[in-house]
Image (cartoon, rainbow, N blue to C red):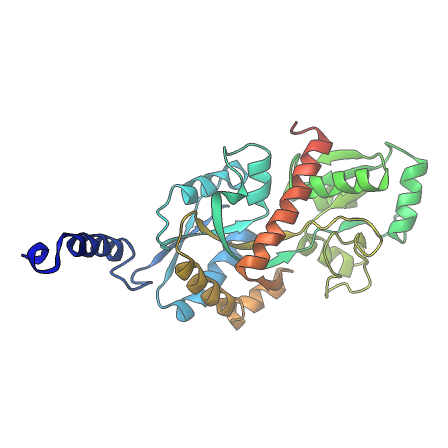
Length: 320
């Protein structure tokens, strides 16, 4: 009957439109809760920050976000699940620098551009730290010492291939240094430094800050784009003339093919969510710098970070 009245072509258009409307929640987005995938286990920083952001964003979005932890393979389990999800806006991934490390090192058979990236929420700095009784008061003094004493200084990191390891690798290469890299794991970094197992560590700022405040540790340099507001006297590699900017960023990604209209709605909601007092309070407590980037700027940022991380892996010999 419809085909006779409007013509066969119009009938086909109506059918296609009907399927499209059904696929994206009856034409209204969002019309149901959204899965919020977290790449690491419950109770950790990624989990706590992600849940706080999800909760703070709900009232600006109109539907709840349901946090789901998918730890494993350095984030690879979550990214694999996100990649295989429908591009309908009902699954988002709480990404981090792990979207570049686990892809470049080969934990998953795809790269960071296998997704649409919604926005960056902010980042945590990874300074180079020493004990307070170390002979180097400045980064320049440390560099001079290492150049005169190659392969004698041990620098601890979270693990081979981690962002803290890669930061030290780039420092070594850019400054012409020779150090010994020691994979300690996250829990052993500070005790190993204070106990004298290693002379230096590259460590997320929230772990080091209490020990700096307590007079047991000293920061030498930040691998961030700008000085950290919590430690404005500590210079960055960049301002000292070295092109090293690696940050433990966090943001949001969705499956490839997600409509731009949905991405824009998510971007807008998460920007407001990142400004909620319930989130900013936790961010400050955990040393997380809220530094929002929209999808276009975030895409360029990811390209730059990926190039740097890929280069660090090659320098370290972890990938060919």
